[in-house]
Length: 324
Image 1: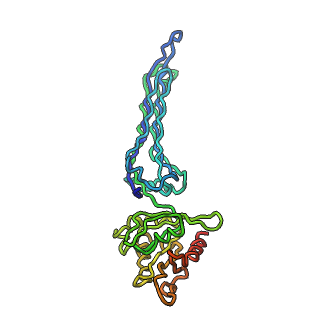
Image 2: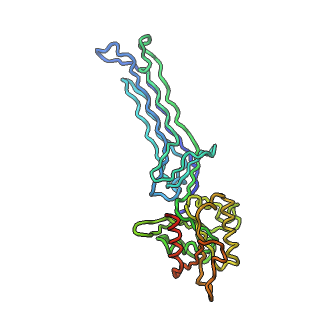
Image 3: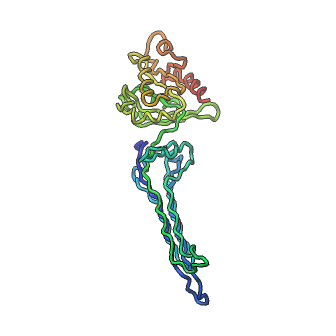
């Protein structure tokens, strides 16, 4: 399934039904009086988060949503039926924006969150509502109100505890496949990962956390190069950033600084998040053990090999401490 994380839609709430002008004419009730009922209210449009969805792909097939209009009022004081509401389901983590103003209407972070995005019009009053002592037979009614119409931009930012950031072929997909139940495509060419992959990692007795494998960044990703500008937004949701760097890079420290610069250019607040550095493929270095902490000046640097499991436990323990 294609990963869709941005879509624009149009929604229209139902119009209210018109009020009715009628007079009661029944045998043995010669002065029945006005009996026009009210129109029904139009249906509203809601957007609700649903755990069964992981992308916005369903919304690409139908970008126009219309709620049902209310029925017109009827004689004998019968009110029109209210229009049915429309519920649009989206994955948790979806941000709803007004397309015209770019204003955020609601951030559906949690499961079951919902918001009304277009309110249905109220039904009009029938002539029975206008009866007074002076005017016992009114011949007026109200039309129903129009339902709201709005254009919306829906943007999905995946919800994960840990986000993996690195260059193509740094070993992110292999790492997530070893520590979680995720089964990403793994190959020896750049940009194998084209969409974010989520994996659930178990630790302790019954505790888990979610890891997001973000497609590889390149220098200039924040300005639109490669795939980075498309998926950098997903890092904003994560609690912890794990920089994944290949130990065979010409300059490991420089690679780390390039990644940090791209995150800063996208959103400076990302640098305030807790982070760990995972230097991968340490099994390819022969001879004495490489002093990784000397290459990168950080206490949270771990040399790992996802294939044989070297260093994975230490790295996971550090991540778990941040999560706790």
